[in-house]
Image (cartoon, rainbow, N blue to C red; front, side):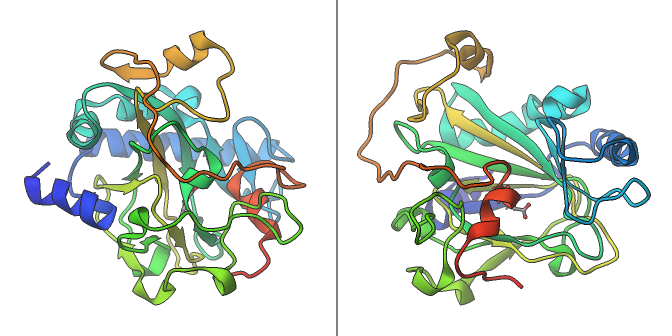
Length: 284
Ligand SMILES: O=C(O)CCC(=O)C(=O)O
């Protein structure tokens, strides 16, 4: 990564880096994704691999997300651990990295759903905020197929309210009560093989996809190894098993704004399920 890209990330909260993941890996990732979507016709409701949309039928599979793709097929694990991607992440977070999660959002052609404005930090606050999300573009992404939208510099602003007026977490910001200006949104468009990177406190979202093309993005959360989740860990073995490179650390505590994502949404699940309950939708 160039110095001006590093500077842009810390100033604006996001950056796009072109031509990071080699074409052969992207092609393989797309072949596997096609097979996974075809196989979804045997599945009738969301499970540990598939997040299905309400329109899903056995004849017309409608998959919103592949959950934990790095566990579903080695090609996604390979991308997650590739030196090309890790070099970019290390340039921003340092040498010691843990994987926070992976997911593959498809935003399918002709109706892939919008994602309401939110900050990832609201879902998983940590002891410090040296955490970012990489989006690997598996297909070209332009204004037509629902690119990620970022509110520049919002990572240095407040943590917005992601709770419903009735008090439960809904993982989305009611635009009527937001402190940012949605008109300032910037679209992250680029060719397949590029990566987007955004800070864990960035306000972001995306429109629905009305185009003829899917918009698959492999999203991988990486954290500095000294950022420990405030929601706790399941076991120390699982936690340390998510180390990607470098060495583990004790938690580093920073003065960061936190509101815990509790009580959970009535339909607690993926972001799509959580966000059903937002009081004011931004993207219709
Ligand atoms: O897929 C998208 O457009 C946005 C995804 C996102 O922000 C998320 O899953 O947290």
